[in-house]
Length: 63
Image (cartoon, rainbow, N blue to C red; front, side, top):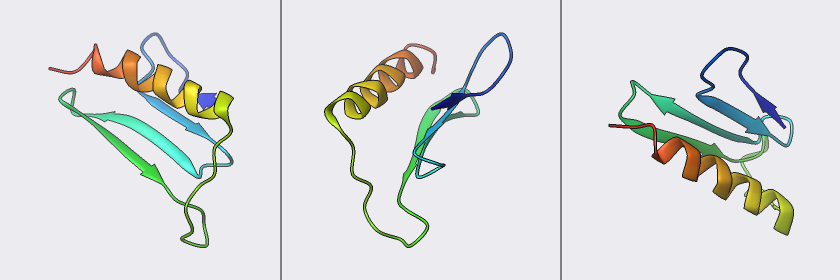
């Protein structure tokens, strides 16, 4: 799992880029969740909670 470097992180990815979440222009959250083969991404319980935590954190930062 990786977060962008810097004081405020507005980009998150995991599973080798299959799950990407970012804040766009400070007003919305974008998600891309698909494998390179265009298949759905499977998440473990831990991974699903991590995504939920990221979304919760990002939601408090958008306008």
